[in-house]
Length: 143
Length: 166
Image (tube, rainbow over all chains, first blue to last red; front, side, top):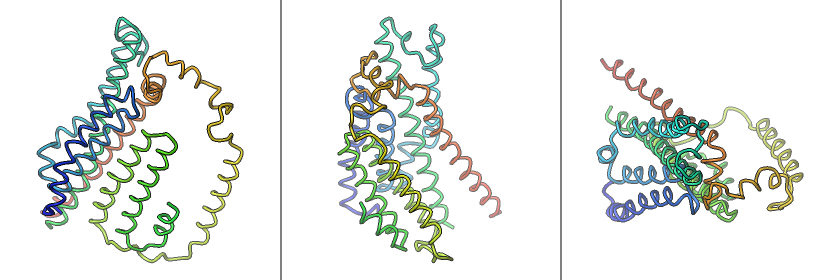
């Protein structure tokens, strides 16, 4: 599939916009539809698209395995970390009101970081599953 | 959509089945947009039509692309699923009308959510991340566990194969 000129050109054109749209969905999630899960999935779909067109090895250069595996855990840790931060600042677990002086700002801050955590984990898991399946296929081919 | 499902049930070629299920997911996403659930539609289009189609194609690459003939007639499973569907349709007739403001689900905690004391314009985000933060933490943990399980399963197999080769 990698030698198709149309796919390469369209992919090169579209992939930056897919990634940009993922970030838009992430950071505009407070105002429009979307949020962490959608953003993570769209970001992962953009990378998978890249891997399909330009090959798994090139995608691995962009998103190396160690980064993907770190993302897997980092998102959950960030989410739980927001909860623990609430605890340390004197509230309940996942209580965002104490994260800033103004309770409403605290809510915004808490929601923001929680959504970032969701996006990181979802994107990492999607990419990891894809890498696992795709690299198994490659191993079979070489056999 | 009905056509996609019928074709999906008829086909014996797994490649066609994967492509049809991707098309079904896209149609489902348009239905969700029509129901004003844009974020669910985005998820359906990206996961259902995008990533899972790619994953199924990757799995298809590892096995034969034609479904084996079933060993026996499908009458028992068919009757069970038809009976379940009939029961569900019967139950759905007892639900309140679509978008009925008097429905119980709109009387319980929803008014408090809509007062929007966290001041986030998107109520879905507010509910998911703030009011039901524990639920969402659990969901993220489920996703993480899925990824960890995939790593544990597939990686060990790779090591074993390397061991077999020696």
